[in-house]
Structure formats: C-alpha cells, structure tokens
Image (cartoon, rainbow, N blue to C red; front, side):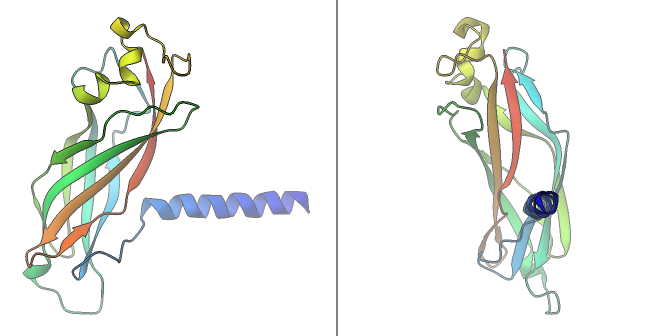
Length: 183
C-alpha cells in the first residue's frame, strides 16, 4: 500500500512538472496564446568569477497559438514581441536575491508560427554586482555572507511580453529552472 501511494504521488508530481513546461495562459487579451515551447543551452552551474558580463540561454522558442484552434486566424493575430523579464528566488536557505532583469526584445511571432531567440541574456553585470552573487566574487570573499555557503541556488523565472497587431497585450506563462552559482 505504501509503495502504491509513493508511486501515485510521484506520478502526480511528474505530471505537474511536465505540465508546467507547456502551460497555457488563456487569461491574456487577444485571441492568441504565447508559449515557450523549447529552450536549449541552459547552464546548470555558473561560476560568478568566470561568467563575464552575462549568462545566456543558447536558444529559446516562442510559439503563437490561436485560443480557438477551430476559429479563423489573420495577420492581425501576429504578435510583436516587446520585453522579457527574469526574476529570481532562492531554493536554498538564503533570502537575498539579485535584482530582476527586464530586457527589450524584438521580433514578430506569426499566428500559428514561432520565433527563436539565440544567446538571450538571463543575467547581466547588475545581477552579479549585487548581493547575494557579489558575495561569491573573489572581491566579495567567495562566500554567501547570509548562509555561509559557497553555493547559491536560484530559481530563475522568465516571462515574455508582446502585443498583437490589434494592440492586445499577451504574455507567456512563466518558465522556471534552477541554476547553482559558485565562486
């Protein structure tokens, strides 16, 4: 009985995790949904002293899907991309987080189509030069002063924003991933 309960719990957790990767956000304006469908080249561990001026994702794809798959579509449902936002939260015992990153992004995502961005920054010098990541720099002592650890684990949340040609605001569901930061 205990094994069956563990198996069911694990199955539910895995289903929830996989569903989060392709989550639909139907509450945005307009007749379309923006969805992140693929991303590659995500770093699992980053040295703050070797990262340079930015940490990037090699590629990320955004699809433009009609809310009503059986309804008509037109070029007025194409989405002009505007910005993306990156926010941070701790997955370890610390509470301090880097400041959010808000970046401009350009491109048109046609209805029933996709666009791919390459080498998209998820962190810049502003994030590295502020606590808690600045603590891990050689000049900061190489240890998180809040936790006493040489590893900072951050959940990174990204979201993309745009407008349909008719001016309706649309956004992707947040995508999340965890990255460890070391000196």
